[in-house]
Image (cartoon, rainbow, N blue to C red; front, side):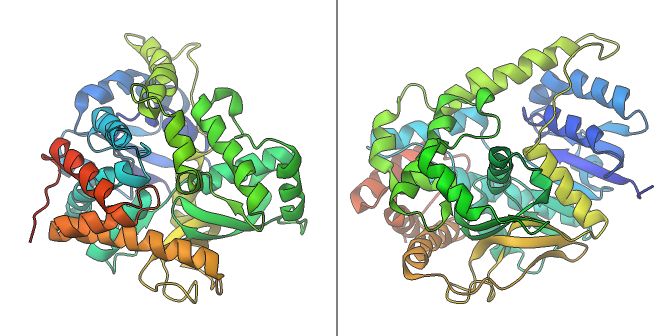
Length: 442
Protein backbone atom coordinates (compact mmCIF):
# COMPACT_ATOMS: atom_id res chain seq x y z
CA UNK A 1 0.00 0.00 0.00
CA UNK A 2 1.39 3.36 -1.00
CA UNK A 3 1.85 6.12 1.55
CA UNK A 4 -1.25 8.31 1.84
CA UNK A 5 -1.26 12.01 1.01
CA UNK A 6 -2.97 15.16 2.24
CA UNK A 7 -4.36 17.30 -0.56
CA UNK A 8 -5.65 20.87 -0.45
CA UNK A 9 -7.93 22.00 -3.26
CA UNK A 10 -7.94 25.77 -3.65
CA UNK A 11 -10.65 27.39 -5.70
CA UNK A 12 -12.73 24.51 -4.36
CA UNK A 13 -15.97 26.06 -5.60
CA UNK A 14 -14.94 25.48 -9.20
CA UNK A 15 -17.29 23.40 -11.33
CA UNK A 16 -14.24 21.23 -12.01
CA UNK A 17 -14.02 20.14 -8.36
CA UNK A 18 -16.80 17.49 -8.44
CA UNK A 19 -15.11 15.66 -11.33
CA UNK A 20 -11.71 16.05 -9.65
CA UNK A 21 -13.07 14.39 -6.51
CA UNK A 22 -14.63 11.64 -8.61
CA UNK A 23 -11.27 11.06 -10.26
CA UNK A 24 -9.46 11.03 -6.91
CA UNK A 25 -11.70 8.25 -5.61
CA UNK A 26 -11.36 6.33 -8.89
CA UNK A 27 -7.57 6.49 -8.58
CA UNK A 28 -7.26 6.12 -4.81
CA UNK A 29 -5.30 2.86 -5.07
CA UNK A 30 -2.68 4.65 -7.13
CA UNK A 31 -2.81 7.90 -5.15
CA UNK A 32 -4.33 7.28 -1.70
CA UNK A 33 -5.52 10.41 0.11
CA UNK A 34 -5.88 10.45 3.88
CA UNK A 35 -7.28 13.96 4.00
CA UNK A 36 -8.87 16.38 1.52
CA UNK A 37 -8.96 20.05 2.47
CA UNK A 38 -11.37 22.28 0.55
CA UNK A 39 -10.60 26.00 0.47
CA UNK A 40 -12.25 28.83 -1.43
CA UNK A 41 -12.48 32.53 -0.62
CA UNK A 42 -15.99 32.39 -2.07
CA UNK A 43 -17.66 30.04 0.41
CA UNK A 44 -21.06 30.55 -1.21
CA UNK A 45 -19.80 29.07 -4.45
CA UNK A 46 -18.36 26.03 -2.69
CA UNK A 47 -21.68 25.54 -0.89
CA UNK A 48 -23.25 24.76 -4.29
CA UNK A 49 -21.22 21.55 -4.55
CA UNK A 50 -20.42 20.91 -0.90
CA UNK A 51 -22.99 18.20 -0.12
CA UNK A 52 -22.30 16.43 -3.40
CA UNK A 53 -18.52 16.08 -2.93
CA UNK A 54 -18.98 15.06 0.71
CA UNK A 55 -21.37 12.28 -0.28
CA UNK A 56 -19.02 11.04 -3.02
CA UNK A 57 -16.14 10.84 -0.55
CA UNK A 58 -18.34 9.28 2.13
CA UNK A 59 -19.45 6.51 -0.23
CA UNK A 60 -16.27 5.76 -2.17
CA UNK A 61 -13.49 6.85 0.16
CA UNK A 62 -14.84 6.76 3.73
CA UNK A 63 -11.30 6.51 5.08
CA UNK A 64 -10.53 10.02 3.81
CA UNK A 65 -10.86 12.82 6.35
CA UNK A 66 -12.65 15.91 5.05
CA UNK A 67 -11.84 19.47 6.10
CA UNK A 68 -13.70 22.57 4.95
CA UNK A 69 -11.04 25.17 5.67
CA UNK A 70 -12.16 28.55 6.94
CA UNK A 71 -8.67 30.02 7.25
CA UNK A 72 -5.43 29.88 5.30
CA UNK A 73 -3.78 28.15 8.23
CA UNK A 74 -6.32 25.32 8.05
CA UNK A 75 -5.83 25.12 4.29
CA UNK A 76 -2.05 25.18 4.04
CA UNK A 77 -0.33 24.48 7.36
CA UNK A 78 -0.30 20.69 7.03
CA UNK A 79 -0.67 19.46 3.47
CA UNK A 80 1.44 17.56 0.96
CA UNK A 81 -0.10 18.91 -2.25
CA UNK A 82 -1.98 22.07 -3.12
CA UNK A 83 -4.08 21.71 -6.26
CA UNK A 84 -4.62 25.25 -7.50
CA UNK A 85 -7.40 26.06 -9.96
CA UNK A 86 -8.37 29.64 -9.15
CA UNK A 87 -10.21 32.02 -11.46
CA UNK A 88 -9.59 35.52 -10.20
CA UNK A 89 -12.67 37.65 -10.72
CA UNK A 90 -14.88 34.71 -11.62
CA UNK A 91 -17.24 34.64 -14.57
CA UNK A 92 -17.95 38.37 -14.27
CA UNK A 93 -14.36 39.36 -15.05
CA UNK A 94 -14.02 36.63 -17.66
CA UNK A 95 -16.97 38.20 -19.42
CA UNK A 96 -15.12 41.53 -19.52
CA UNK A 97 -11.97 39.76 -20.78
CA UNK A 98 -13.92 38.32 -23.70
CA UNK A 99 -16.27 41.18 -24.54
CA UNK A 100 -14.10 44.32 -24.18
CA UNK A 101 -11.64 43.33 -26.94
CA UNK A 102 -14.56 42.74 -29.34
CA UNK A 103 -15.48 46.42 -29.00
CA UNK A 104 -12.10 47.25 -30.50
CA UNK A 105 -12.26 44.79 -33.39
CA UNK A 106 -10.13 42.24 -31.53
CA UNK A 107 -10.85 38.64 -30.63
CA UNK A 108 -12.21 38.03 -27.15
CA UNK A 109 -10.51 35.03 -25.52
CA UNK A 110 -9.78 34.37 -21.87
CA UNK A 111 -6.14 33.24 -22.21
CA UNK A 112 -4.99 34.73 -25.53
CA UNK A 113 -4.74 38.34 -26.65
CA UNK A 114 -6.04 41.33 -24.70
CA UNK A 115 -8.38 39.24 -22.56
CA UNK A 116 -5.56 36.91 -21.61
CA UNK A 117 -3.44 39.93 -20.69
CA UNK A 118 -6.07 41.23 -18.26
CA UNK A 119 -6.70 37.78 -16.78
CA UNK A 120 -2.96 37.21 -16.45
CA UNK A 121 -2.46 40.44 -14.54
CA UNK A 122 -5.18 39.37 -12.09
CA UNK A 123 -3.87 35.84 -11.75
CA UNK A 124 -0.28 36.93 -11.06
CA UNK A 125 -1.37 38.93 -8.02
CA UNK A 126 -3.44 36.21 -6.40
CA UNK A 127 -1.03 33.39 -7.23
CA UNK A 128 1.86 35.27 -5.60
CA UNK A 129 -0.26 35.83 -2.51
CA UNK A 130 -1.14 32.14 -2.41
CA UNK A 131 2.43 30.91 -2.91
CA UNK A 132 3.67 33.28 -0.21
CA UNK A 133 0.99 31.97 2.12
CA UNK A 134 1.75 28.29 1.44
CA UNK A 135 5.49 28.85 1.82
CA UNK A 136 4.99 30.67 5.13
CA UNK A 137 3.84 27.29 6.49
CA UNK A 138 5.97 24.86 4.50
CA UNK A 139 8.83 24.82 2.03
CA UNK A 140 8.15 21.19 1.17
CA UNK A 141 4.51 21.33 0.03
CA UNK A 142 4.05 20.70 -3.67
CA UNK A 143 2.03 23.44 -5.40
CA UNK A 144 0.47 22.11 -8.61
CA UNK A 145 -0.78 25.17 -10.42
CA UNK A 146 -3.37 24.90 -13.19
CA UNK A 147 -4.37 28.57 -13.05
CA UNK A 148 -4.69 30.32 -16.42
CA UNK A 149 -3.30 31.96 -18.44
CA UNK A 150 -0.61 29.44 -17.58
CA UNK A 151 2.10 30.96 -19.79
CA UNK A 152 1.97 34.35 -18.07
CA UNK A 153 1.41 32.94 -14.59
CA UNK A 154 4.29 30.46 -14.90
CA UNK A 155 6.72 33.11 -16.14
CA UNK A 156 5.74 35.56 -13.40
CA UNK A 157 6.10 32.89 -10.71
CA UNK A 158 9.51 31.92 -12.06
CA UNK A 159 10.57 35.58 -11.94
CA UNK A 160 9.35 35.80 -8.32
CA UNK A 161 10.46 32.33 -7.10
CA UNK A 162 13.28 31.20 -9.44
CA UNK A 163 14.56 28.54 -7.03
CA UNK A 164 11.26 26.96 -5.97
CA UNK A 165 11.39 23.47 -7.49
CA UNK A 166 8.14 22.39 -5.80
CA UNK A 167 6.04 24.95 -7.65
CA UNK A 168 4.83 23.18 -10.79
CA UNK A 169 2.81 24.87 -13.55
CA UNK A 170 0.77 22.61 -15.81
CA UNK A 171 -1.71 22.73 -18.68
CA UNK A 172 -4.00 19.89 -19.75
CA UNK A 173 -4.57 20.81 -23.41
CA UNK A 174 -1.66 18.74 -24.83
CA UNK A 175 -2.85 15.88 -22.59
CA UNK A 176 -6.38 16.31 -23.92
CA UNK A 177 -5.16 16.26 -27.50
CA UNK A 178 -3.21 13.06 -26.80
CA UNK A 179 -6.42 11.44 -25.52
CA UNK A 180 -8.12 12.55 -28.75
CA UNK A 181 -5.27 11.11 -30.84
CA UNK A 182 -5.61 7.81 -28.98
CA UNK A 183 -9.32 7.65 -29.76
CA UNK A 184 -8.61 8.12 -33.47
CA UNK A 185 -6.38 5.04 -33.53
CA UNK A 186 -8.29 3.04 -30.94
CA UNK A 187 -5.27 2.72 -28.68
CA UNK A 188 -4.70 3.22 -24.95
CA UNK A 189 -3.75 6.86 -24.37
CA UNK A 190 -1.59 5.80 -21.41
CA UNK A 191 0.71 4.03 -23.86
CA UNK A 192 1.07 6.98 -26.22
CA UNK A 193 4.15 9.20 -26.15
CA UNK A 194 4.96 12.34 -28.09
CA UNK A 195 7.56 14.89 -28.97
CA UNK A 196 6.45 18.49 -28.47
CA UNK A 197 7.89 22.01 -28.27
CA UNK A 198 6.61 25.54 -27.80
CA UNK A 199 5.22 27.88 -25.20
CA UNK A 200 1.99 27.25 -23.30
CA UNK A 201 -1.02 27.40 -25.66
CA UNK A 202 1.55 28.03 -28.39
CA UNK A 203 3.18 24.74 -29.34
CA UNK A 204 3.42 21.84 -31.79
CA UNK A 205 3.50 18.04 -31.71
CA UNK A 206 6.45 16.79 -33.75
CA UNK A 207 6.08 13.03 -33.23
CA UNK A 208 3.61 10.47 -31.86
CA UNK A 209 4.40 6.85 -30.95
CA UNK A 210 3.64 4.23 -28.31
CA UNK A 211 5.58 2.26 -25.75
CA UNK A 212 5.60 -0.80 -28.01
CA UNK A 213 7.50 0.94 -30.79
CA UNK A 214 4.63 1.81 -33.13
CA UNK A 215 4.74 5.25 -34.75
CA UNK A 216 1.50 7.10 -35.52
CA UNK A 217 2.70 10.53 -36.61
CA UNK A 218 2.58 10.12 -40.38
CA UNK A 219 -0.73 8.28 -40.14
CA UNK A 220 -2.17 11.04 -37.93
CA UNK A 221 -1.18 13.75 -40.40
CA UNK A 222 -2.73 11.71 -43.18
CA UNK A 223 -5.90 11.29 -41.10
CA UNK A 224 -6.23 15.08 -40.79
CA UNK A 225 -6.19 15.41 -44.58
CA UNK A 226 -9.36 13.36 -44.93
CA UNK A 227 -11.15 13.58 -41.59
CA UNK A 228 -12.35 16.29 -39.25
CA UNK A 229 -10.39 16.49 -36.02
CA UNK A 230 -12.73 16.13 -33.04
CA UNK A 231 -12.08 16.17 -29.30
CA UNK A 232 -12.34 12.79 -27.59
CA UNK A 233 -15.62 13.92 -25.97
CA UNK A 234 -17.07 15.74 -28.99
CA UNK A 235 -20.65 14.85 -28.07
CA UNK A 236 -20.24 16.81 -24.81
CA UNK A 237 -18.52 19.86 -26.28
CA UNK A 238 -20.09 23.18 -27.25
CA UNK A 239 -19.90 24.35 -30.86
CA UNK A 240 -17.05 26.78 -30.24
CA UNK A 241 -14.82 23.92 -29.09
CA UNK A 242 -15.74 21.77 -32.09
CA UNK A 243 -14.83 24.70 -34.36
CA UNK A 244 -11.54 25.05 -32.47
CA UNK A 245 -10.54 21.47 -33.27
CA UNK A 246 -11.59 21.82 -36.91
CA UNK A 247 -9.13 24.68 -37.30
CA UNK A 248 -6.31 22.22 -36.65
CA UNK A 249 -7.34 20.66 -39.97
CA UNK A 250 -7.37 24.09 -41.57
CA UNK A 251 -3.91 25.03 -40.27
CA UNK A 252 -2.47 21.74 -41.46
CA UNK A 253 -3.75 22.21 -44.99
CA UNK A 254 -1.19 25.00 -45.23
CA UNK A 255 1.51 23.94 -42.77
CA UNK A 256 1.60 20.18 -42.26
CA UNK A 257 5.10 19.65 -40.85
CA UNK A 258 3.82 19.51 -37.27
CA UNK A 259 0.47 19.25 -35.49
CA UNK A 260 -0.46 22.56 -33.82
CA UNK A 261 -1.95 23.08 -30.40
CA UNK A 262 -5.59 24.12 -30.83
CA UNK A 263 -4.97 27.55 -29.28
CA UNK A 264 -2.81 28.58 -32.22
CA UNK A 265 -6.07 29.28 -34.08
CA UNK A 266 -6.28 32.62 -32.27
CA UNK A 267 -2.93 33.72 -33.65
CA UNK A 268 -3.48 32.59 -37.25
CA UNK A 269 -7.20 33.24 -37.81
CA UNK A 270 -7.88 36.41 -35.83
CA UNK A 271 -10.15 38.05 -38.41
CA UNK A 272 -12.17 34.92 -39.08
CA UNK A 273 -12.74 34.22 -35.39
CA UNK A 274 -13.65 37.84 -34.70
CA UNK A 275 -16.32 37.75 -37.40
CA UNK A 276 -17.85 34.66 -35.82
CA UNK A 277 -18.01 36.16 -32.33
CA UNK A 278 -21.28 37.32 -30.80
CA UNK A 279 -20.47 40.28 -28.51
CA UNK A 280 -23.51 39.45 -26.39
CA UNK A 281 -22.80 35.73 -26.02
CA UNK A 282 -19.14 34.75 -25.78
CA UNK A 283 -17.56 31.52 -24.58
CA UNK A 284 -18.12 32.40 -20.92
CA UNK A 285 -21.86 32.56 -21.57
CA UNK A 286 -21.68 29.31 -23.50
CA UNK A 287 -19.81 27.66 -20.61
CA UNK A 288 -22.30 28.89 -18.03
CA UNK A 289 -25.19 27.60 -20.14
CA UNK A 290 -23.65 24.21 -20.91
CA UNK A 291 -20.88 22.67 -18.79
CA UNK A 292 -21.49 24.66 -15.61
CA UNK A 293 -25.27 24.27 -15.79
CA UNK A 294 -24.82 20.52 -16.30
CA UNK A 295 -22.57 20.25 -13.22
CA UNK A 296 -24.94 22.29 -11.05
CA UNK A 297 -27.89 20.16 -12.14
CA UNK A 298 -26.10 17.04 -10.93
CA UNK A 299 -24.60 18.41 -7.72
CA UNK A 300 -27.82 20.05 -6.51
CA UNK A 301 -29.45 16.61 -6.42
CA UNK A 302 -27.33 15.90 -3.33
CA UNK A 303 -28.75 18.78 -1.28
CA UNK A 304 -30.44 17.43 1.84
CA UNK A 305 -29.56 13.80 1.03
CA UNK A 306 -28.04 11.34 3.50
CA UNK A 307 -26.47 9.17 0.81
CA UNK A 308 -25.45 9.43 -2.82
CA UNK A 309 -28.01 6.93 -4.07
CA UNK A 310 -28.23 6.94 -7.85
CA UNK A 311 -26.76 10.41 -8.33
CA UNK A 312 -24.11 10.35 -11.08
CA UNK A 313 -20.50 10.39 -9.95
CA UNK A 314 -18.62 12.83 -12.15
CA UNK A 315 -15.02 12.22 -13.16
CA UNK A 316 -12.53 13.77 -15.55
CA UNK A 317 -10.42 11.72 -17.96
CA UNK A 318 -8.32 14.78 -18.77
CA UNK A 319 -8.17 17.62 -16.22
CA UNK A 320 -8.76 15.46 -13.14
CA UNK A 321 -6.77 12.49 -14.40
CA UNK A 322 -3.78 14.65 -15.24
CA UNK A 323 -3.82 16.40 -11.85
CA UNK A 324 -3.86 13.09 -10.01
CA UNK A 325 -1.30 11.45 -12.30
CA UNK A 326 1.09 14.37 -11.85
CA UNK A 327 0.74 14.17 -8.06
CA UNK A 328 1.19 10.39 -8.18
CA UNK A 329 4.33 10.66 -10.29
CA UNK A 330 5.84 13.16 -7.85
CA UNK A 331 4.74 11.44 -4.63
CA UNK A 332 6.20 8.06 -5.58
CA UNK A 333 9.09 9.32 -7.73
CA UNK A 334 7.74 7.55 -10.82
CA UNK A 335 9.17 10.06 -13.33
CA UNK A 336 6.27 9.59 -15.73
CA UNK A 337 6.23 11.59 -18.94
CA UNK A 338 4.03 14.64 -19.49
CA UNK A 339 4.13 17.77 -21.61
CA UNK A 340 5.57 20.06 -18.95
CA UNK A 341 6.41 23.71 -18.45
CA UNK A 342 10.02 24.40 -17.49
CA UNK A 343 12.61 27.16 -17.74
CA UNK A 344 14.47 26.72 -21.00
CA UNK A 345 18.10 26.72 -19.88
CA UNK A 346 19.37 24.96 -23.00
CA UNK A 347 16.44 22.66 -23.68
CA UNK A 348 15.70 24.50 -26.93
CA UNK A 349 19.21 25.52 -27.96
CA UNK A 350 18.46 28.55 -30.10
CA UNK A 351 15.68 30.08 -28.01
CA UNK A 352 15.67 32.54 -25.10
CA UNK A 353 17.13 30.77 -22.08
CA UNK A 354 14.84 32.54 -19.56
CA UNK A 355 11.59 31.57 -21.28
CA UNK A 356 9.22 29.02 -19.78
CA UNK A 357 8.96 26.48 -22.58
CA UNK A 358 6.53 23.60 -22.97
CA UNK A 359 8.22 20.32 -23.86
CA UNK A 360 8.09 16.64 -22.99
CA UNK A 361 9.56 15.96 -19.57
CA UNK A 362 9.21 13.86 -16.44
CA UNK A 363 7.95 14.52 -12.93
CA UNK A 364 9.40 12.94 -9.81
CA UNK A 365 10.71 13.78 -6.35
CA UNK A 366 13.08 16.35 -7.89
CA UNK A 367 10.32 18.15 -9.75
CA UNK A 368 10.31 18.77 -13.50
CA UNK A 369 13.09 17.34 -15.66
CA UNK A 370 13.37 17.66 -19.44
CA UNK A 371 15.89 16.40 -21.95
CA UNK A 372 17.41 18.71 -24.60
CA UNK A 373 15.14 19.22 -27.59
CA UNK A 374 17.68 20.73 -29.99
CA UNK A 375 17.18 23.68 -32.31
CA UNK A 376 13.95 24.92 -33.85
CA UNK A 377 13.63 26.34 -37.35
CA UNK A 378 13.27 30.00 -38.26
CA UNK A 379 9.48 30.13 -38.64
CA UNK A 380 8.72 28.60 -35.23
CA UNK A 381 11.53 30.48 -33.55
CA UNK A 382 10.18 33.76 -34.92
CA UNK A 383 6.66 33.03 -33.70
CA UNK A 384 7.88 32.00 -30.27
CA UNK A 385 10.25 34.94 -29.83
CA UNK A 386 7.38 37.32 -30.54
CA UNK A 387 5.04 35.50 -28.14
CA UNK A 388 7.68 35.31 -25.42
CA UNK A 389 8.34 39.04 -25.74
CA UNK A 390 4.61 39.63 -25.15
CA UNK A 391 4.63 37.32 -22.11
CA UNK A 392 7.77 38.89 -20.65
CA UNK A 393 6.55 42.45 -21.09
CA UNK A 394 3.21 41.53 -19.51
CA UNK A 395 4.96 40.22 -16.41
CA UNK A 396 7.26 43.23 -16.26
CA UNK A 397 4.25 45.52 -16.64
CA UNK A 398 2.71 43.85 -13.60
CA UNK A 399 5.79 43.97 -11.37
CA UNK A 400 6.73 47.52 -12.40
CA UNK A 401 3.14 48.79 -12.75
CA UNK A 402 4.32 50.07 -16.11
CA UNK A 403 1.71 51.44 -18.49
CA UNK A 404 4.27 51.69 -21.28
CA UNK A 405 5.30 48.05 -20.99
CA UNK A 406 1.63 47.01 -20.99
CA UNK A 407 1.10 48.88 -24.26
CA UNK A 408 4.27 47.34 -25.69
CA UNK A 409 3.13 43.86 -24.68
CA UNK A 410 -0.31 44.23 -26.24
CA UNK A 411 0.99 45.80 -29.44
CA UNK A 412 3.29 42.81 -29.94
CA UNK A 413 0.55 40.23 -29.48
CA UNK A 414 -0.38 38.66 -32.83
CA UNK A 415 -4.10 39.02 -32.05
CA UNK A 416 -3.64 42.82 -31.93
CA UNK A 417 -0.61 44.02 -33.95
CA UNK A 418 -1.59 47.67 -33.57
CA UNK A 419 -0.28 50.34 -31.24
CA UNK A 420 -3.52 52.32 -31.41
CA UNK A 421 -5.71 49.31 -30.66
CA UNK A 422 -3.33 48.17 -27.92
CA UNK A 423 -3.68 51.47 -26.08
CA UNK A 424 -7.43 51.74 -26.64
CA UNK A 425 -8.22 48.25 -25.34
CA UNK A 426 -5.83 48.73 -22.42
CA UNK A 427 -7.73 51.82 -21.29
CA UNK A 428 -10.98 49.87 -21.10
CA UNK A 429 -9.36 46.88 -19.39
CA UNK A 430 -7.72 49.12 -16.80
CA UNK A 431 -11.08 50.66 -15.94
CA UNK A 432 -12.80 47.34 -15.10
CA UNK A 433 -9.73 45.84 -13.40
CA UNK A 434 -8.98 48.71 -11.00
CA UNK A 435 -9.44 46.62 -7.87
CA UNK A 436 -7.12 43.92 -9.22
CA UNK A 437 -4.25 45.78 -10.87
CA UNK A 438 -3.17 49.31 -11.74
CA UNK A 439 -0.56 50.82 -14.04
CA UNK A 440 1.37 54.07 -13.96
CA UNK A 441 2.79 56.28 -16.67
CA UNK A 442 6.45 56.91 -15.81
